[in-house]
Length: 294
Image (cartoon, rainbow, N blue to C red; front, side, top):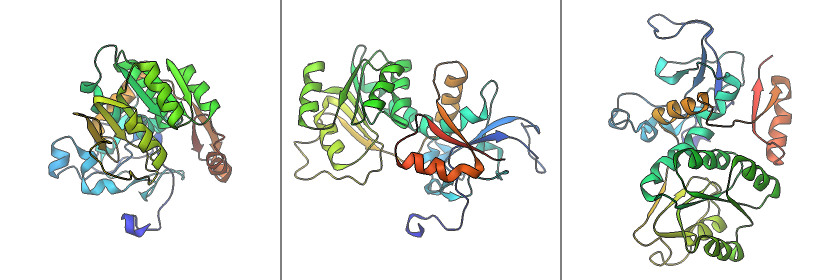
């Protein structure tokens, strides 16, 4: 982990929510007992990126809660500044936690592509579980696009349909790409790849239409082979990023408190955390695994 800038040891536990237990000297804006969510990526608050509101590009954002700095698999979590907290009004911290990364990262991707999606356009979500499930909902909330979910799991595709996806396609291959073009009458205005392996990158780009956007969000260590010129969307946009901004997180929490997002969670006590990881590894979780300390 050290080559990533993550200095061990640190406590695991990503996407954190809870209640304020105590306040340090000078802390303002919060009271003991307040329900809060903790920003997922870390940022310094004073570099040029933070000043621009692009704090997800801060050099410090290579680390975050549960990856490089102490996370939430503990009874108490230390927070250095109140800029790392979101006050919750109606949302349970159990539900808010997953929104700080899975919900906000997918939201950032969708916001980036909004200028590329015209009224009545089309968007494709590759990988319908986890972040992809939120992306489907963000697209439905923020655009009038036809939303197509693509996945290898029939269970995740059924879930995507529950969330409102207009069409679902099983598999990521030449046949599904051909079927996608048939459904849409061409490529999509935006394609979101929440997997990021060779296969999804190749077919994701093939599914992106002229002047469209391809968002590589999944960190699957995939690559694109061969010459680039004929593989990228003409007059389009290809981008990646690591994390959401503070503004993204605030906006997603507001959407959820307004009843615009469905957040499914699978709850485990802290003494069953190993079981939660095993179920995640086997793909047996419907929502995000949320671990609650004893």
